[in-house]
Amino acid sequence: MSAVWAAARAAIRRRRLQTFVIALVALLCTATAVVSLALLDATSAPFDRAFEQQQGPHVVAFYDPAKVTAEQLAGARNGVAAGAGPFGQTVADTRVAGPVGSMLGPLAIVGRADPAGEVDRLDVWRGRWPAAPGEITLNAPPEDDAGFGQGPMGHLSTLTVNGTTLTVVGWAYSVSHSADAWVTPEQMTAWRPSGLQMLYRFDGDVSTRDAVEQRLAGVLPGGALLAAQPYQVVKEEAAETAGVYLPFLAAFGVDRFRENLRDRRVHRFTA
Image (cartoon, rainbow, N blue to C red; front, side, top):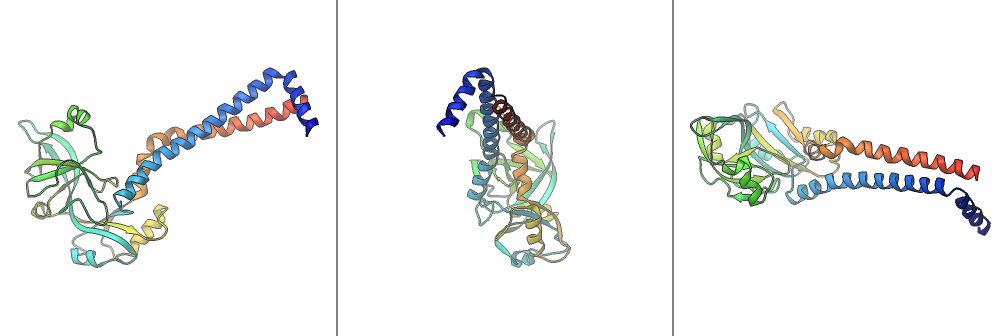
């Protein structure tokens, strides 16, 4: 080994510039790979932590009330570790109440008695939960008072939904984005909901969309299911920004590392 180290030191002394360049490239490609891995963790870890804290649903399912009753849904627990619902749901165009009502666009609104439960425990971070018909709580990520007050939603006090003027009484956050807003079950019943929402958590493998969809198919056989959102959809949306450039960083790091190895072979041969 002493002879090898002596030869290596001699080669470095003769090729100082080349050695410095190779070392710098190796450092940069290693740093790039580390940054890409750190970005991957930074985009997925917060979602995973919040998902577990809120007992987020592995799937949000939307059923046709003409083909299945609320009682049937409540009793269908085949392969379900935990569930919440059924909740009445409707998608409605929403206007900001005022002399000139402006459209907010369609909102998925759910009738839910409280923010707690086995699945999708909501974080009511401002105001309170609806306690009576005529009240609504909107879904939004938590903000500090300064940022919320300066934003467009900070001055929002009333909404018009399905011809009904509702008072905005609070803001809550669902990491799974199970709804855009919530009202009381009584308010939803008055609107005649277009669907029934169920929130499910499953045991076993739920790492892929196919696995989640297969487990959902076994809960309630038949054609009552209208739509379903596996949690992977929301997780991918949360990581969308970093996902644009993460593959390029990883590819650059690997490519630089391969070139560095090739340069080192040439260096050793010429030395």
